[in-house]
Length: 140
Ligand code: CMP
Image (tube, rainbow, N blue to C red):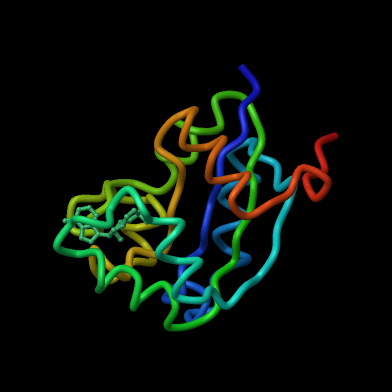
């Protein structure tokens, strides 16, 4: 099925100047960018986005990192977009990510891991709504 998923290029990858290289991977895999904006997240926005992780020991480091510089946020659309994007990203920990994945090639650590992608249909819906009001998504 045609799906949409939320993708974030994190501050480490933006600082490395690889937004274009990462977009090329999405496009080459048949994923289309149907919404995008660059943002400097506030602490409240980052905490809200990652609210499911609030009780995890890495929460503070995660939020600190996500507000450390601008991020590039996009909605990707395509056949099986959620799983496809996760395949392109590779494992959360870049040390465990398969060769040729975005995280294997661009990430330095489990915190500075280059990209975020929604992990399922419900999360995708919620994460897209969190950053993009419906009027700002341009399908077809
Ligand atoms: P992301 O897909 O953005 O979702 C939550 C983030 O928390 C994750 O990527 C990692 O960057 C970060 N993180 C740090 N430590 C861990 C951990 N032990 N398990 C999962 N995620 C972690």
